[in-house]
Length: 300
Ligand code: 13P
Ligand code: ZN
Image (cartoon, rainbow, N blue to C red; front, side):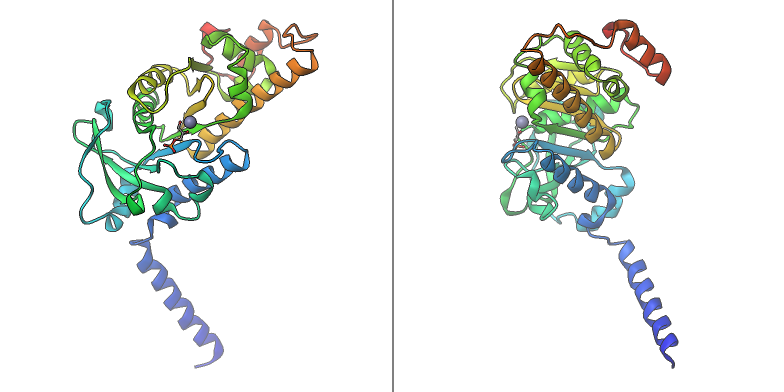
């Protein structure tokens, strides 16, 4: 057998090994898990995740659940009540960051810093089926993720899968100086830069200061997310949702960029918001028409 034959044999072996592995690709190697870890790392690169700040959830598609099942624990954890109920999440599986995990570590050690939970038949409890090594637990914002996932699943006919919570500084800073009603907050961001309305035509809703981690912030957030893809949490951060990791991350980027532009304009203007120039109201309508956006009319 010559060199080329040897090479062919090696290649064939490699292919059959790869084929064999396709039915058992480790959870960490699956595309959705890589996208999850990448978003966590990208959010850290933006400076949005000091310490354990922020968290992330992803609703698995049925084929992703099927390709992960062989890696699930033989004995899942017992059911843990969520404190909220979402009928349309019954039987769904979510990859979720662990409470206390630093998002910069998610890509390095996924099954310690995140895990997969299954939602029970009544949509009001979860159990761990994979990951959360060493006794870790899902994020303290699990109730908010559940109700946010539920609201966006409903609002998008099932397209939405990613819910992302981050602590971007300019967005948080604006909640100290801009009135917290959704119309004012949205128009402030839309008028800061063209791309804002293009990125979030449904606008942003705002939840006033609320103690995190409980059912109150979860319910208030879900109410906002029924007709917005982004919810700002005053003096805390934002929660946004998308069909893909790119969509959810891009939304957070656009909100934070617009907040940054507005904040810098305020600083350059001596703190006042009467600017020499701004996008006029007709300009907002013009953007909506030019881009064919499904804009929230109440904010025009
Ligand atoms: P967790 O570490 O429990 O996810 O909490 C972080 C956070 O940002 C709470 O709002
Ligand atoms: Zn937070």
